[in-house]
Length: 285
Image (cartoon, rainbow, N blue to C red; front, side, top):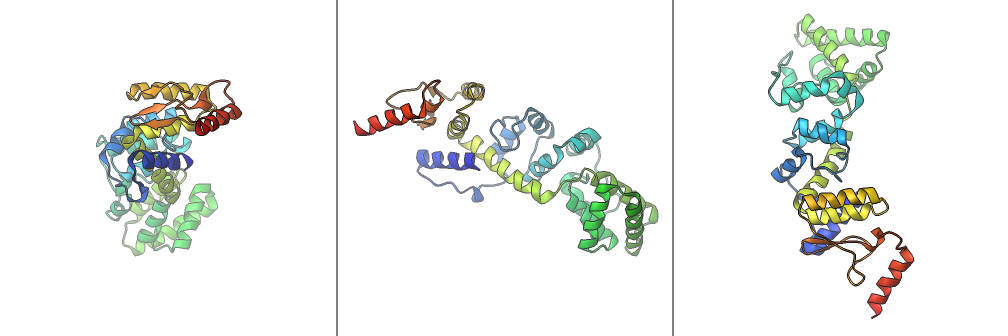
């Protein structure tokens, strides 16, 4: 969030406008283009090499895909093959099928795969007449895999499904499916909150690359390896980084039109006291 605030401050300085991230479109083509290319260094939650690889494989096209992406990038879904199944369905390599028509409304956004704990609860409430409290107990039981508790929950689920005129064999298959995915299910509300910050960061990088890279460089001033990596990315993006200048450089990396001026704090062996002295002398004289 500090990084986002810094980029917004820089955008305000360079454009003279205050950008309100609450009003940006969640279907911005430029943002999804950036995500699909794996250009996610500095993007919240999407920086690691493993996440970059998953983003490029999944190719998010809408905000719901970004939410799912963050829920799927965990050891359980990755090892179980659940992620591969999700990607194949999304890309049309595997047909999306639903055990009963009622599931489509619940699982359409995740291509028929149970990704979220909330989906397990929705299936239980809509198809087996569970209350929300009972559905939450079912979710926890499935996560813990306690045989006795699971047997009781299965009995309740089958009875509820029967009232909904769902054939016994289908209801049983559905329960097993839920139990299989519930082990890896993630909290959707948590994932959505992270996804929104990830999307906003990606939006800023896609639309304001100079301000974004200046903020990113400033945030990593104490790490020479990361500074070198980000400077290399600036070169790839054709963003010119001007050398440090005793008369122009500030403590941080700063934006000058469409260029970045090197920050004094990133210059080796230049301490904070020296920087403050330089800036004070400039202001006085």
